[in-house]
Image (cartoon, rainbow, N blue to C red; front, top):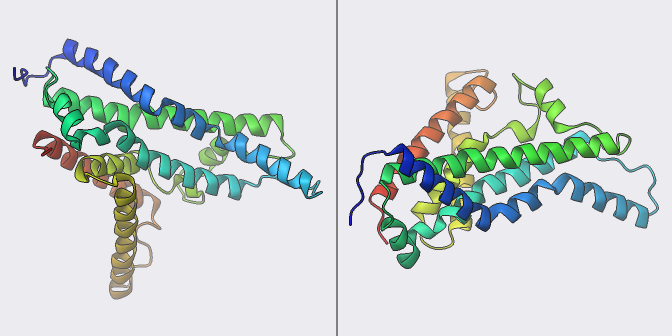
Length: 246
């Protein structure tokens, strides 16, 4: 039976709870493990330095920032694929389409879980672990990322603040419903090539128009641009899931 396409808040809340539980089972352990990265990096550095006889080792901010940038981008890009990559599978995707929930309710739940709840939970856990490393080992861990980020608002000195979690997660979600096989690799390379093309286009505009400061060098313009990309990717995902072909 085809579900009522009107948005029902009670039905939506039940579905959201079920969707969140399913995603926690699929990606909860990975999220927790990735959030422990600062402690793992600290422990590995301490072990490798002691094995090499280096007693002056320290985790500098630029290194922890670079590690956070790489880990977070990969996590934000991969998470929606882990949670919603099954939508293009013939068996699992058909089961999803048969659920007595409207498409809008499924879509809003997907956005909340894949682009808001999980990225926010990961960021909070990661920054908490990072801050704890700094508190417990202040002479070995230069500065907490959360403090550095607060001081960096209005500028881009930290790599971990270059991309917004919502833009990267929305790209991962679009890749989850766009590709049918090798979703992770295809989404990553598509995103990487798109970013390279963007830099080439912006560089060309800057040279020809003699513009001294343009995206991504202008922090506010860069974040506005990412917000626009997020909306476009989310719009694509909405219509793609509405007429998805298994």
